Length: 425
Image 1: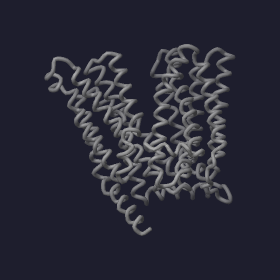
Image 2: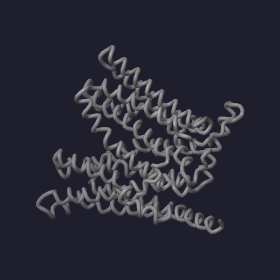
Image 3: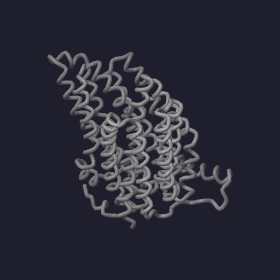
Image 4: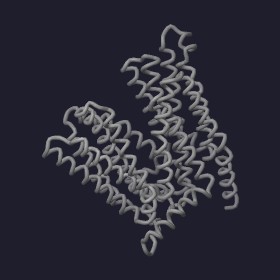
């Protein structure tokens, strides 16, 4: 991977700011889960809080998408990071003065942070593609993926250490500081003005611009393809890693806590290393073909994975260690390819969607893929309880293969259009 982009001040400040706020956000989410379990002893209560937090996303995503395209993106992301810092600071003060946070207050905190995140992501969606040239988008998304995955790996470790030693108060304070630092770094970024604010803000103007965003999704087959793929991935493949492999590891293979922890570490490492290991390959393959190949490889690996927990395979060996090692190897490769697929999908999205419509389009994309996460978890969670896990994994693979077959032509035709435009130029 080429790190030349990190020498560009605006790009490096953006990535640094995103990393700092990501670590702060992940730390407070991780610590809040531990805190709720500590004061209530109920995982159901925390799950309920997270479920409630999806309501703002359902209600506000269309509004946030339009506003993200209307207003100055730099001012918006700086302001929202400062607001997050203030919110967390206020709740830290509440904790200091009262000695605790009630479940109701935690629910309010989660909802407030969810609201700011929706508007922040809408404004942020066009920032990275506006800072780099079109032929640098793949490199930029790879670097972004690498740095964000570093944050995802480090933040729960840091949070666990701090929570164990200093408690929730320290996490709230540090998270507040992280958002303020992120806002300060963003003040120095020169972000091109790609927003398009109407002369007069009104309900009519809002409706017109909202429909413009929906129309581009309907009319552009490639954008609807990306939304479809993202939704299917979260619906069928998300539950495999979020529920299925945990269930298989603990209930079928009966691995120890240490072995399961090592499995989680291997999976995290694969996502972290993907941009470094696959960087050269990513550059050599056209973006549409890369996306298609990535999802095809994932589907094939899932079919191979389905063999490991089957009774026939398990009876062929004296212990479950062969299945466990096989799970480690395949999961590592899947982690690599999934990360590559996400980079390819993100780059494709940045290339196709006009910057002035990025907020509206990205919020629709995020809403679609987010809504289907709990739906998939619920359906596949039930399936893992009532039928053979190997069969459930095969179902996940078949759903992905059907999606690949449906969207193959659209993905590959994008490369052909790109070649034609390059030839004309």
